[in-house]
Amino acid sequence: MSYLDRRIQLLLDEPRYRKLAREARRRRVSVAAVIREAIDHLPAEADQRRVAIEEVLAAEPMTVPLDPADLRQELNSAHDRAG
Image (cartoon, rainbow, N blue to C red):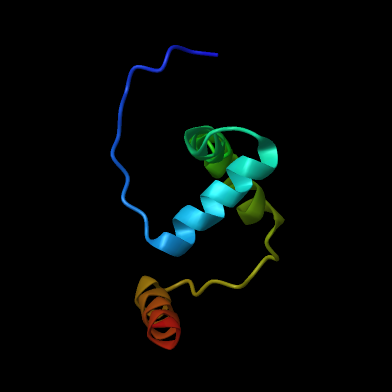
């Protein structure tokens, strides 16, 4: 385990605190230990990139307009539908 040298202040609402405290009691560790473990499970930036690359490579091929203006119009339409 590494040396703990940073202190943070975290404000939680009561339901979140109860959830953390319940998990800490179940594991017989401190609330801080539960929070540190949750942080340790966050994906690293390299992991996020790898997953994104794998998703792009696994995507089905699609036709793309040859004219950049047509491509821009298609992208704008897709963006408008999503938003």
